[in-house]
Image 1 (spheres, rainbow, N blue to C red):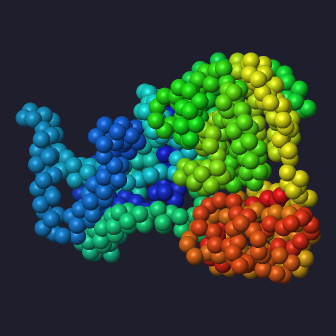
Image 2 (cartoon, helix red, strand yellow):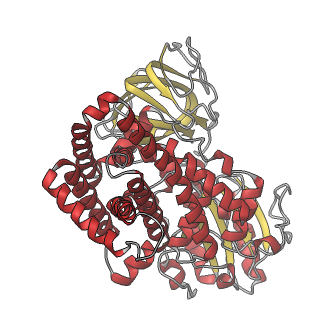
Image 3 (cartoon, helix red, strand yellow):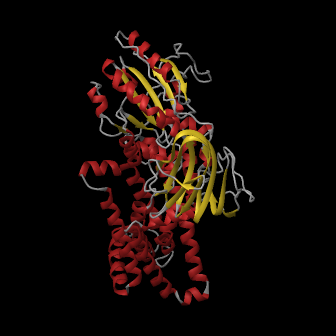
Length: 601
C-alpha cells in the first residue's frame, strides 16, 4: 500500500505537465491575483477536498439522488464564471469581500489567544475567498490518470471503494495541489516584485477575470475537450510517458492485490508458457481463471435466456461459478481486428447450434487501439457484426493478464467442471474447434450432432497484417526516412511490392497511426482478395478516394463510386475481389483521418 501511495503522490505532482491541466491553467494562475498567499492555500484546499470527494463519491451521489453528473459540472462552471466577474466588477468584488469577512469572523480568535486578531481575520477572509474556487476546480478537472488512479476510479464506478482508495486519491490530489500552489506563488511574486506588473495590477486582475469567464464558457460548451483533442492531434505523443514510471513490477503487484482480492494466493494458470495443443487432443490445464475484469457486460440477456443467474446492472458481475455446468468458449477479440471479425460467422454457427445444449460463448473485448475502449463504439460494432452472445469489456487488460494471453483472437475451451481443456490462437482450425466443443458437451452428458463447419475457401491471403504507426510498422518504403511523431513531406516509390506501402505528401507518423496534414496519398502493394483498413475520423468531412491498379474501386462494402467516407472509428472494407491476386491499392486521403492498420482476406 505504501508503494501505491508514494507513486500516486508523484503522479499527482507531474500532472502539471499533462495536457489535461492546460484548459484550467488560467484559473490556477488567477489564484495568484489578490487576496494574499492564504487565498492560494484556500484554492488548493478546496481542490483537494472537492477532487477527492467527487472522485470517490460521484457515482453514489448520482444514484442516490437521481441527478445527472453534468448538473454538478454546470454548478462548477457557474462558480468559475462568478469568480471571474468578482475580479472584473469592483462592486461585486466588494460584496464578495464582505461575505468572505463574515465567514472569517466565524473563525476569529477568542479573547486571550496569542497573535494578531486582525491579521488572523484577514488571513481567514483570504482563505475563504479562494476555497470555493478550488471546489469548482475539483469538479471540472478530469485528469490524465495512470494505472494507479485508474484502478481507484474503476473501484469508484463499481462502488467497491475501501480505505485504501481514499488514501490513494488523497495522496494524488495533494501531489497535484503542490505544483498548483507553486504556480500561484510564482505568479503572486511576479505581481508584487515586477514594477510594470505592480503598476498595472488592477488591469491584470480584470484581465484574469475575463479569462476565467472565457474558461467557464469553454468548459460549459465542452470546448476544453475539443482543445485537448486538437492538442493531442498536433502533438500525439504529448503526455504519453508521464505515467510510464507507474508500470513497474512492484506497482503492478500491488494493483493486482487491490483490484483482484486474493489474487496473490490464486494458483497460476498451468498453460502459461505451454505450446497450444493441436488436432483437438484434450488435456486438463487446471481451473479457468475467474472473471476479474470490471468492464461492462454487454448482451446480458443472452445469459438470462440460458437461465444463468447474474447480479448487478451494467458492470461485470459474472463469475466462472455462475457458468458451472456449461461448456464455455472464452473468446478474446477486438472489433477492428479483421482476424477476429473473420471468426465471428463460425462463432455464430456454433452458438446457434449448441447453445441449447449448454454451450456458452463469453466474448472478452480487449482493445488494441484507444478508440476501441469506448463502450458505445463496441456496442455498435456488436450490433453491426451480429454478435448475440455476452461480451465483457476488458479495457484495463485484467482478463487478458489473468490468462497470460498475447493474441487476437484467442480461444480457451472450458469444460462443464470449470477446467481449461483446450486453447488455440489466431483464426482457422474451425473443424478442430467444433470437434472440441462437441466432445466437451458429450462429456457433460449431452447428445450432439457431429457435423463440422466448412471453412470458407475464399479466406486466404499472401499479405500479412500491416500496422502503419511506427510502433509496429513493417514494409514502409520511401525516398524520405520515416520521421517519428513529426510531420514530414514524403516522396513515394512508384510501385510498392507485396507487403510494402509508401506515402506522398505531408504526413504525421505516430506510434499507432498515420495522419495527413491536409491531404496525402498512400500506395500499398498486396496479394489478396479483400483489403480492410482501420480508420478513426478526428474531424468530420474527411474522405478517401480508393483506386485499385489505377481504376476507381467498386464492389467493396464501405466504398461508393470509388469513395470511402469514414464517419466512425472502425474497420472498413476497401477492396472486395472475386479472387485473390497481386495488386496496387492507392488511397487519396483528404481531411483529418487517422489510418491504423491494413488487414487482408
